[in-house]
Length: 56
Image (cartoon, rainbow, N blue to C red):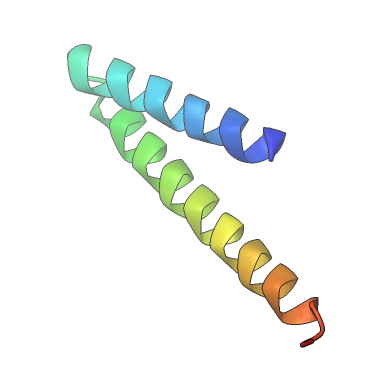
């Protein structure tokens, strides 16, 4: 969970810097890619964890 939050924070910071600083639009794109990858990994981990629980 800590890695998810850290990557989300990095993505937000990169997005803010990329959006506000002139000529650093690539940081905005990198921030978006990091955020999408982070959410995808978290979703995969959540679905795998949910499948392992036995039905009662």
